[in-house]
Image (cartoon, rainbow, N blue to C red; front, top):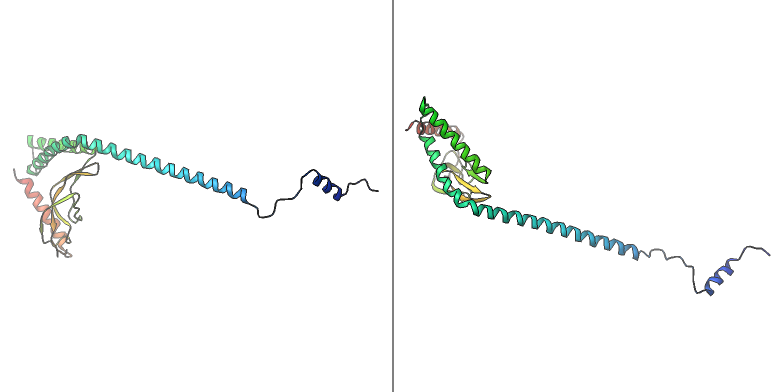
Length: 208
């Protein structure tokens, strides 16, 4: 008789102990599916938490900008009159100045530049659309409409007074002249319009 135990004897002993040595059935992936589902659930929670944190950051930034804009808006409006007076003074200054007049013009230009830099540093941006810019009702105020051969209908012909925007909010709209309906630019109108504008600007600077 062989000393090697028979397989039948081993199985019989296990069955007597109440245990059955059966391998798991192929395709039984329920535990793995559960782990994957839990992973996806935690990932979804993490993404939601990150999105909520980003929304809170944006809301906080908007509220801070609104509070800051409200605090300095009135002061900014008062300073706009100073900026307008400097603009008018420079427009009335002679084109070619000598002696004390030249020093005065230089001082005005430096003051205007410093004022605009201070505006920019505090979120107050100057809005002065050039000819051909599309009319924006949020930042521009149409003072008049007239036919134009240099720009298309609905575009700015000229800026009469610059406007200002504070943290994305219009403090004062730019006053502009808009091309009337039916305006169509001609091929040589751009050059002629630029020459006329330069002539008008030179004439304005020669006036005292």
